[in-house]
Amino acid sequence: MPSTSQAAGSSKSAKKSPPRKAAKAKAQDDALTLLMNDHREVEGWFAAFDKARSDDRKRELAAQICTALRVHTQIEEEIFYPAYLDATGDEDMNDEAIVEHDGARKLIDEIENGGPGADKWEAKVHVLSEMIKHHVHEEEKRDGMFARARKADLDLKALGEDLAERKRALMDKRSA
Ligand SMILES: [Fe+2]
Ligand SMILES: [Fe+2]
Image 1 (cartoon, helix red, strand yellow):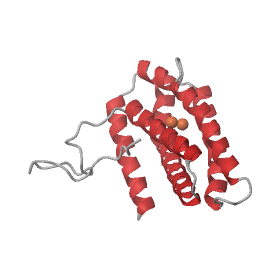
Image 2 (image 1 turned 60 degrees about the horizontal axis):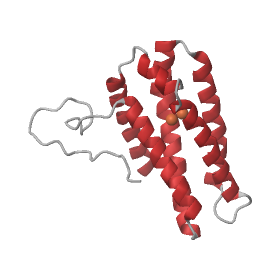
Image 3 (image 1 turned 45 degrees about the vertical axis):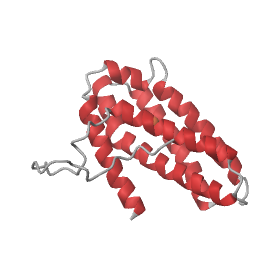
């Protein structure tokens, strides 16, 4: 799946731009679309990992998956979940999601510290994939967190802008 990162710096007019970072001329995805695009992207990389033959390709895909999941879970926890909790008071769903993120991050640490050939490394990537599948289902299922967010009094457009901006900053920091 193609990367969803926006082509920054493509503002087309000389119009004074606000102090926020570039690429605001383009319609911004709302929060749920942005988060679901992240989910699809990572699912694509897990599927590619399953088919990969060479250790280099596996290492590359695992690194992409781990980076994307670190950034995704961080922007959810910093921006989306608090807004969700605030709007819905739904502590159970919020807490469960955070505990699932914590579990995934433990595995991500181990995957990042290992590599092809390391003890149970590929099994760890597969288990991470299963954990994420479950977690994404909890977020996207009927009456899951995203469905409830859609019904709640949330400005999903503004949240989408905040998520996109934070995501860009975190990705920049990682590739610096
Ligand atoms: Fe998510
Ligand atoms: Fe999540």
